Image (tube, rainbow, N blue to C red; front, side):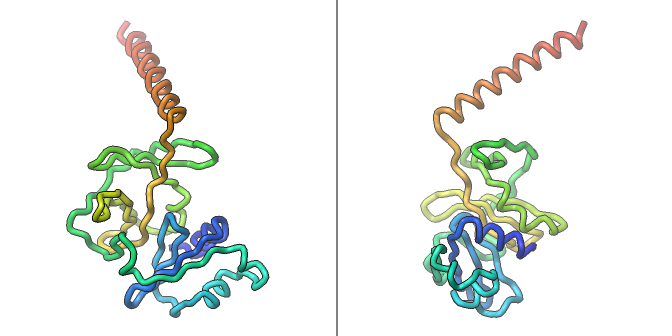
Length: 185
């Protein structure tokens, strides 16, 4: 995992949550969570020092520190009901974000791809669907059996977004039908 990419995400959002989980801590910006394997045990002061945030700038950040037992997400490597998601490598750019649609057992979710940047140096990364006890879907980023991170879906859905996608789909179908018609002559 590229810790500099995680640092960049945290500095951009200025929201940091540190989770204590047994022998490992996790750091999050409220959307994505990343493990701090092989790192010294951190507190607020040492985390800001590691991120190279000057003392006079720290008041601009929101910082929280929790035990993982208070979090509805599952931070273990293997969850019996998780499902590997197929990625079609299609992305959409909307409101300055690049999002990837993912087909889940409950429909579709969208993932802000910036949260995958810390995993760019991993050999093979799989995205797995997991659910909270109340049924909310979230994404586990894994390499083999090892959990590398957790990402909450991004919700771009509104009337304008759905109308644009519907129009794009209809235009694509028309173009495809024209192409097929030309190819068969």
